[in-house]
Length: 372
Ligand code: GLU
Image (cartoon, rainbow, N blue to C red):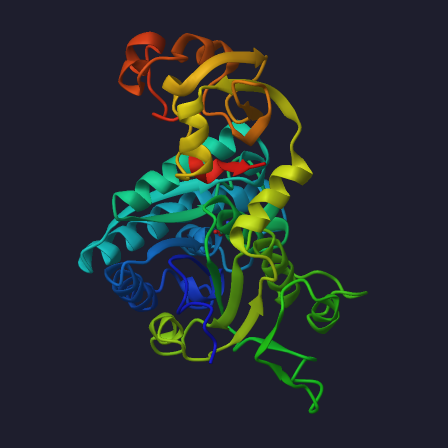
């Protein structure tokens, strides 16, 4: 039994170019219809799903009449811009045929490394999920080429899993999963049903040590699983043409290779806050807010804020202190220190009037907050 997907409420599914475009023959309507049908069924089970799809370059090459992949990055990027039109159109059409709304989101690795953009992307994606719309994500190939050089969106899939704090990442590929060695060359190659994500032995099995890192080979999938595990998401690598692969995984069937995250989501988030972020400021909150945070697991609203210290931007990590000054929590601020000073002690309904716009009703959302 592989319970990774069965237990998962929020799932990121990544499909690679060769599957999406039927080995470069052009956007594969039937295959996309098949995954969209399954995504809609998962949504009807109350799960939230995000699709990360590559295939823009492969489709663009077909539309431009190119039979061999160009070497120059600008040409590849141009092909991606051409092909993304067809890709988005196909997902829109197929998801809508299965009763689902869709949204195109183009992201870069740098977007997710920048705290403000990270927060913006996260808020947008979570809002889309709340609206029961399926985000269809690709790399923004016009402005960057990380996934073009290597990865074919495997890394992006993991970054998105981190971003939305998914429970599971499913990487659909043209192989059945991970083997201990290349089964075409080594008859003793063993299929790996399950392993710990981040196990160094996996990288060697996937051809890491010494071998060249191919675009979207097994090594990038193994590394993606390690990265996804950083925020508590387990990964399944499976064959994308396996009939009803997503539905069967969600029903608990063991298909493909499961790479399990060792850390629970909350612990992973705490670790991330502790490891990567420096405090840029603090807010002192009233006793009511302390109770809401500590005992009720609620977000921090501006109305509970007594005063604001330091100079911080949206997306910076700030401390939350009790009236006596002890640290209660820390988290990502939705508003800058200047804005926080204007909206402190005010109900969230007044944010728009005070600032001229309203980003979120919370100063720190509970999902971006850890008690300390
Ligand atoms: N983001 C690219 C795409 O969707 C990556 C795949 C590739 O390099 O071919 O086409």
